[in-house]
Amino acid sequence: MSNKNVICELVMVTYDIGPGLSPFVAKVIKEIQKEKQVKHLLTPMGSVLEGHWKDVLALVDKLFQKFSPEYERLGITLKIDYRRSKQNRIAGKIKSVEEKL
Figure (cartoon, rainbow, N blue to C red):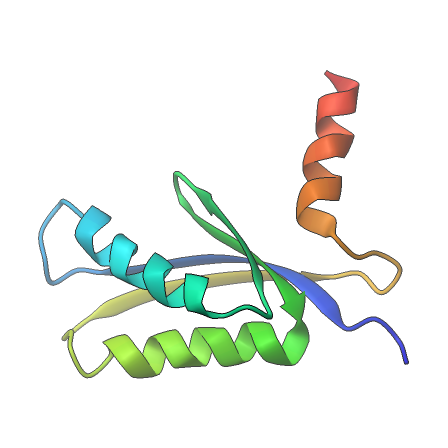
């Protein structure tokens, strides 16, 4: 069985609540933390998710399904990187850069 793990940068915001997005972001993060199949790293500009392709996309869909009825407008940005030969890429990418500093 080949590796189907991906690393994904997710930004999910609503434009309905004004300039302060942290209350909405906190709701999103709470939902992400419930998903045990997907690793998560919060960054100042979004979240990094890592897991099996289907699990990551299912989580993004779950977030959309949860918040789209509640808010008039959502902005969702996804960047996905797949590399067959690697796993544990969140930690590996950070470590690789830190070793070069």
